[in-house]
Image (cartoon, rainbow, N blue to C red; front, side):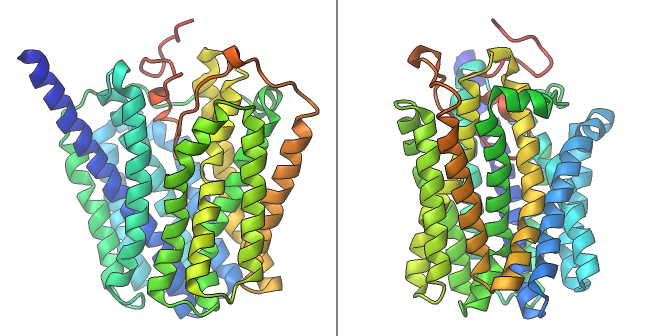
Length: 423
C-alpha cells in the first residue's frame, strides 16, 4: 500500500512539473513568433528583427552560465519565482515600449531569465525521477516540450498581433508556470553547476558532433527567429504563419524517434548525412517556391523540422559512441553551450542574407549551412572508422535547453550531479 501511494505521489509531482514546463515553453514559443509578426507590422527592417531575435539566444547563453550560481545562492524556489516574475513583466513591456533598442534589451533579459527557469525545471524533473524511470521521464519531457511549443503557435490566432492581448497571454503562461513548480513536493534538486569539457577536447572526441551542434543552433534559431518575417513578406496571413511555424515542430516530433531507431541499426553518420542533405534540399525548395501555396510551404516546413531538429540528438548519440560513460554529462553540456552560441548568431546572420536576397534568403541561408554540414559529415567517413556495434550506445532524444536534464539520459550517471559515475 505504501509503495503504491509513493508511486502515485511521484506521478502527481511529475505531472505537476511537466505542467509547469508546458506553460513555460508555451509562453516562450508564443512570444518569439508574436514578436516576429509584430515587428513586421511595425515596419522594422529584417536586420533589426535579426538582432532582436539573436538577443534572446545571447541572453540564454549568458543565463545558462550564470544562473546556476544564482540558484545555489538563493535556492531553487526563490530563483524560479524571481526569474518567472521578471520574464512575465518583460512580456508586457514588449507591448508598452515598441522600439528596437527596448526590444533588444527585453529579449536578452527574457533569454537570460528563461535559461534559469529551464535549469530549475529540469533539475526538479531530474530529482523527481527514480533511476528506473529516467528514460521515460526524459521521453515525456521531450513530448511535452514539442507539444506545448507547437500548441503555442496556434495561440497566435486568438487575437490581433498589433494589440495587447497576446502579450498578456504570454505573461499569463509565464506567471502560471510558477504554480505547479513552486508547490511541488519533489525532492530538492542536486547541484546544477555544470562541468563542461573544453572545446578542444570535444573536437578531439567528435568533430562531427561539435560542428553539428553549432550548425544546428545556427539554422534552427534562424528559422524560429526569422520565419514569421519571411512568411509576412510573402503575404501569408497570421493563421497561416502560426501553422507554418508549428509545422516545423510537428515534423520534429514525428521523426525524432524513427530516425533514432534507424541510427541505432546503421552507422549513425549515414543518418546524419542523410538528414542534413534532406534539410538542405527542403530549405532550397522553400526558397525556390516562396510564392507557392501555403499548403505546400507548410508540408515543406514539416519536412524541414523532421530533418533538422532531431539531428542534435543524433549528434549527442554519435558523441556518446566515442566517450567514456563518466564523460557524458560534461561532453553533452559542452554541446549545449556550442548550440547556444550558434543560436545567438543564427537569426542575425540570416537577417543579413535576407536583406541582400529578399525573404527567401532565410532558406537559402539554411540550405547552404545544412548542405555544408552534409558535405563535412561525408568527409568524416574518411577520417574515422565506425564504432563496433557493441560499442554503440542507444539513441536517446535529448533537449538543447540546458545541462540540468542530462542526468535523465539513460547513459548518464544515474545519480545526482556531482556524484561519481559508475564504471
